[in-house]
Image (cartoon, rainbow, N blue to C red; front, side):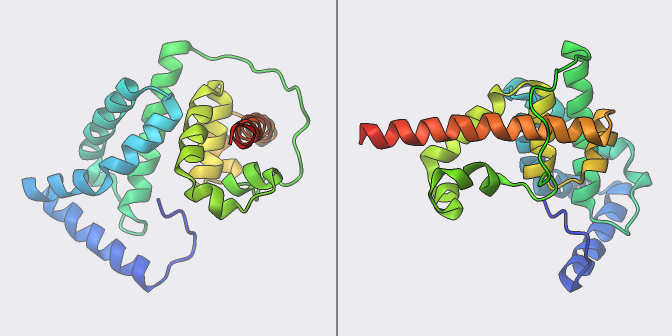
Length: 211
């Protein structure tokens, strides 16, 4: 999803397209509703799967998200992109479902957060592996390992990592979504990155030794 804060010509065109599509859907145009779902269902499902770590739960989030989207479609404001608005609804739906399943929990802070938490991404995680991050991103085997490693994280760590490093939300936005302070989000994110980097490093080392 495009989380860019700047608005360029392409973004303006997309916003106009979104506004027209929404107006048609509000007028009862079934094809417009179907197009909204088709355009955004893959991103919603992928986000839900990464957050919940469960395909069945991700399907439930997908369905709940679009039920909520069409329930609240009249609230959409054309000063932002429809995908961004749907993304926020999907995030809320996934987090609510996760809380209802497992309740709230406390994760002790074992490591102090680092100072580079605003600039992290997958490249940050794999940077210490002495390989080019782009090469690693294009490595399908490693990508699958990363996806499995993300799912294995405790929910609070997984949520912080997915929303920051994969979805591009700010620390403040994540804190609002999770009901946590920015400091707590930073701690969760730091721990998530440490765990993932360790798992990926062990995977690459084991694969190289087995080659």
